[in-house]
Image 1: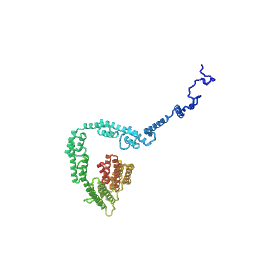
Image 2: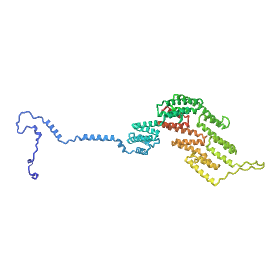
Image 3: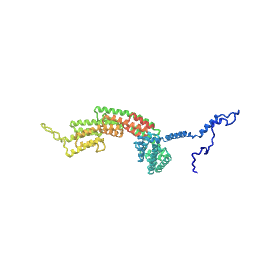
Image 4: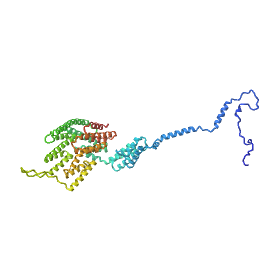
Amino acid sequence: MSGRRDQHEPESRGRTEPTLGSLDQLDAPPRGAPMRDDPPWPDAEPRRRWRRASTMRNRPRRGWLVPLLLLALVGVVAGAWIGQNRLRSLLPRTELNDVLSRAQQALAAGQLDGRDGTSARELYQAAMALEPDNDMARNGLHQVGMAELSQADAALQAGQFDVAAQKAAVARELLGGGSDVDRLDQQIAAKRASQVQVSVLVQQAQQAFAANQFGGEHGAGTLYRQVLQADPGNAVARHGLDQVGDALAAQARKALDANDSAAADADIEQLAALQPNNAALPGLRAARAQAQQQDSAALDTALQQGDEALRAGRIDGPGDDTALAHYKAALALSPDNPQAEAGLGKVAQALTVQANAALDAGDTAQAATLLDHAEALAPKSADLAAARARLQGAQAHKPPRAAAPARNEEAAPPAPPPVLTPQQSAQVARLLQQAQDATQRGDIMLPPGRSAYDLYRNVLAIDGDSAVAQRGLQALPGVVQQLFNRALAAGDLNRANQMLDNLADLAPGDASQNIMRQRLAGAWLDEADRQLAQGNRIGAAQSLEQARKLAPNQPRVLDLAARLQSGS
């Protein structure tokens, strides 16, 4: 059989599928059935409903697509939420990426921690400030902590216990502690204890106490504290430290009774460093504050009397009513007092003016005496150096002493100035150029021998009449003021300090120094405030000390000192 059905074969000869027939005719009685009054056929409506349900069951089911699509949408949203850091990392973030890149470079270079903003820790923390939930920055800080831990371990093995302790502390901050950090701290403490010979230290401390050496690096207080660091429960060291505290308190009271404020301050500071909670400290500080008020009143009186004597022309000489005597009395009350030192500079300036007047009158002997007195007070004054060169020139030009001329004879004319040799002229020209270059670089007083000040003086030593050298030397104070302003504007406070010191040497009586000093003190106090806000108490104390040297009685100095002492 070919299997091909004849096209003329009737369709009814094929396979016939069973059918239910027309459901619409179910309501009618069977064909040929007699009409009788039998009960009617059941209602056709349920049958229609059954038929529609059957049809729906036979259709392909697609209702599962909607829940599936909803489920997929929920998955996409959840994935986007969970991977938001990854999605965010795909966006362009120039500043954050730059900070992270520099942080990774610093970490690779071993620059783990610092204060100049270039260390890995600072840069990763800066990245965290830009994006607190950034995983790269968080992981980077963890890597820095692990690197600090590794370096601490290496320092411990090398016997550098202080370095190891410092780095372990940083690691603890970054890693949040942990068993590795605890283990390292224990090892550091054990190593220190094993290296310290407690008995020897105790013996040395007792010897120092017997010799009244209480403070300082090798004093009894420091030695007893070293013993307690190695053995916190050492009763001998604790008792010895109490004895040192009592001795320092007694010394401070004795110094206060003798009006020796410098010695009293030193003893009180040492006591506070050794025993911050010593019961004698409050009373000593109160007594010192009262003494300071009295000293301040006496200091103001001495400074005022010095200014009055200077205006009256009583510059120096015998007696205690001269400007020099009053300013020295002020310095005795307050060593390194800026106003008293400026007063001595004014005295030196006045003596230099008198010396120039004596030179104008031809009295070189008087000029030399006045300059000697001025040099004792302000040896690096630019005006003094110029006047000294002028004196040397006048002495070189002065003819030798001869017999008095006869009545009708004319006096001999003054000797002409000496003529420089070609070699001297060339040397002067070279030194002048070097001095001008040093002035441009800002090398005013340093380095020795190559500073503008030294170079101009070298010129005057060869040619005391050099007007260029004298003008250049006397112009240095103005240059220093310009350099001071630039350094202060740039926040380079150490450079500004240096320029202020240069001005005090070059022009000790310049009235503008007081204003400059107050400006610089304010800048140091601003720096101390910033450091204190950042938790850098050591740096804040150092900045405060710089401000205290410049303006010891400024209210902000006293306020910040009180805040540091109270720990606020």
